[in-house]
Length: 260
Image 1 (spheres, helix red, strand yellow):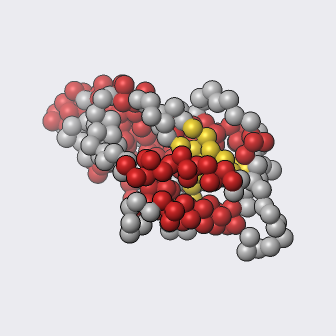
Image 2 (spheres, rainbow, N blue to C red):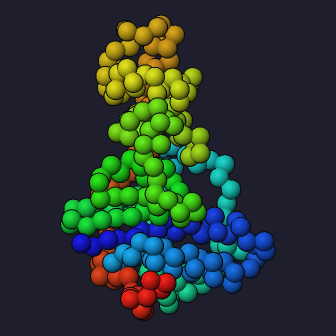
Image 3 (cartoon, rainbow, N blue to C red):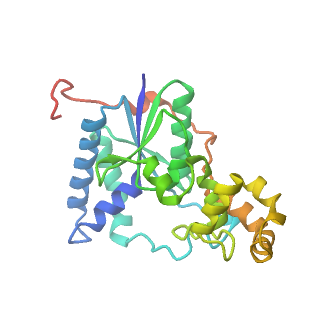
C-alpha cells in the first residue's frame, strides 16, 4: 500500500525558522529543515513524500471574505528571500515540492483524499488543526514538534463536540486564528452546547423557536455569517492537480539501516 507523507511546508519551515537565533542564517535553517525531513522519513517510512508550499495568489477565501486571516504577520524578508534556495536544496535530498497557487491547505487535503481513493494512506505533517475535518481512517496527522499524532479524542473533549461537528462549531463560533467570524455573540462553549442538543446546523436553525428569544435572535441574524464561516473553514478536497505520484517517490539510500 502506498503511504504518502504530505508536509505542510511553511507550517514546518516557519516554526523551525522562529527558533533560529540569527534570522538571517539561512544555512542553519536549511540544515534544520533537512534534518527534520530526514527524521520524518525515518519515523514514517513512506513510499512517497512531498512538501506543499503556499503560493502568492489571493486565495478564494480572501476574495470571498477580505478579512480572512487579516492581521497575520507577513513572512520575514530573509525567509522569503531564502525559500527558493531551500526548495532547491530539498530537491537534492529527494524531497520534492508541490506549489499551490494560493493556500496549501486545499492542495494538501485534495492529495490526502486522492490517496484514500486508491486504497493508499496519507500522513499530513502539520500543527494546523483544520485538517482534523478530513475524517477518514487512512488519513492521519503528525505533529513533528511534539512527535505525536493528532489526538482526535482529546480534540473532541477540548471542543466539546464530536469530530463530525468541528465545521459546524467553527461556523457558529468562528476561528480567531484565521479571522473566520462565526456568529456575533456565540462563543465556543455556547456553540458546543447548541450542537450537543441539536447535532447539526440545519436542525439548529429549524429549531430556533425552542430557544430563548435573545439567543434565537442572535442565531437568526447570524445565519448567513454562519454559512459563510462554514464555507471558509471547509477544506476543498477535489482540486484538479496535475501531479504524478511517481515523481514523489521516497528514496532511501540505505533502506536496511534503521538510523537512515
